[in-house]
Structures are given as C-alpha cells and as structure tokens.
Length: 331
Image 1 (cartoon, helix red, strand yellow):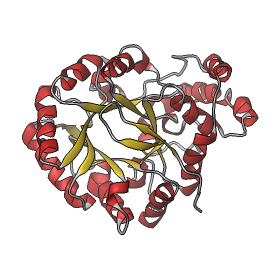
Image 2 (image 1 turned 90 degrees about the horizontal axis):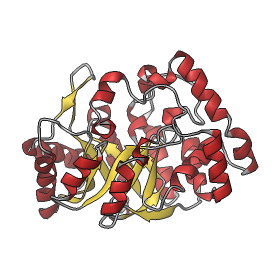
Image 3 (image 1 turned 180 degrees about the vertical axis):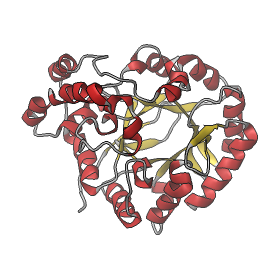
C-alpha cells in the first residue's frame, strides 16, 4: 500500500531547512509500541518518502541504535540530499534497556555523533539535538560542541528538545537554533504560555511530537510499550481522556477526515512555524499522516475544537513522575 498525495513544506525556523509537513517519527519502528518487523518498517519509511516526505525524526537511543540502522537500510539507493535526518542524542541506556540518564558533555556529543553517522551510513546529520537537558552541563557547552560539528560539516543545523524558555534563550545566544522539539497536541498545550512565544521571538521553529497523544487520539486502544506506564492511559484517566477525544468524531466525519487527521491538522493550523511529527509504524498510519495535509480548518472550526477539548482538559501527566521531573520544559 502506498500513497501518491504529496505533502506540503515548511521551514524549520529562520535558519533551518525546508522540510515536509507532517514529519514522520520513527521511534515506533524500534519497539516503543510493540514489535515491528524490519521489512514492514522499511515499507513504512518508503511509503512516507514516496509520498514526498523528507523529514525523518529519530534518536540514537531508539532501540539502542536499531532505528538509525533501519533508516540506513530504507535510504539505500535513494538520494541522501532529498532527506532531512533529525537525530536526538544524549539519552543513555543500561543493558536491560532501561533509561540511565542524560549526557550532554562535549566529548559525549562528539562520541554520540560518530556512532550515529556510522549507523545511518552518512557523512552528516541535518539536525542534531540533545534529547533532554543535562542539568550537570551548561547548555552553552552542549550547544557549543554541536556548533563545532557544524563548522566541520558533520552537522547542518542545531535543534533542542523539551527545554524551557530560558534554556532556549541561552542556547540561541551561542549558535543559531533551527527548532525545538516539544510535545504539543490537543491534550498537551503547555508550550503556549512561555516556550512558543520565545521561539517565535527568536525565529525558532517547533517540531511538535505526540500530536496524537501516543495513540489516545485515533489509536487502537491497545495499552502496550510506553503507553503501559503513561499516566494518561491508566484507569479513570484513560476513560476520561477517551471521552474527550470522542467529542471530535462528529466534526471529523463532517470534514470527511478521521479523528487523527483532524488532530494533526489542528496542530498544523497553530502556525506556519510548527511542523507536526507523527509517529507511524504501519502503512495505514502513513496514509493517515499524508491525508491530514488535505484537511483545512477555518477559524470557526478551530474555535469549535477548542470548545470540544478545552486546554487542560486531559487527565494525567504525559510522562511518569520521574520523567516529568527531568523535563526542563515543565519547570
């Protein structure tokens, strides 16, 4: 199954590359939401690229390097310059697969990139970003190390992920930042207070992940992988959030769209500086991603969606308590 509808494009901030919108988030192809056959994973990546997609979002810790190797396989025989690879680094894992902290030291930055280039089979990464803030290392040092890699041609642009307004300002004072990756959806709108205004002031784009609430919006309802520990999927929270999302069904049907497509279109409608990143691990999910570009929302429809799912209406944190405490964007 493939799709021929071509995606639109947006630029990542004032200094970043022009990319397809929505982007494809590849994390789910490496077991985050249950097993995916590698051959199917390649077909998913090919379907997105064949539809005109260019922006692939990955992390060196997705599947402990598996995700990058899978992308290398998918890109074999294709023009590398037609793909924008956005890579997160710094999240460490133990041999049991558990998370083991963040390392943003300059020496670690160079080390992480060396392995990513090898696994991806490329001589450069288009956007390179720390996955989280390492509180033991000044952000100036981490960004400065990436800037040195930009000067040497190994990295094209610098991004950030899940950092707050003050950290963004400090980072941007060191080197141009093209975008900040943040969770943003109808169920998670915290960036609207301080982070998004600062990004707009500084000409920094937002790549919005979690636009479908990890499957709460338009998902199968299966609670597995990272969903099994997500507070929003537990008990009464799950029932409440599911009822919220159900309010979108009538409007989506009137638009000839799925609830998931409506939610993606809502994020895209929040500004030309925002690029939704939609996780996909099946061909039908790629079709949903691509089709969302055909859904336009006018002012009245956007207002209606805000009435149906008011800001702050979701119950449960977006991560378990320890992970929430580690987020600079939540401080």
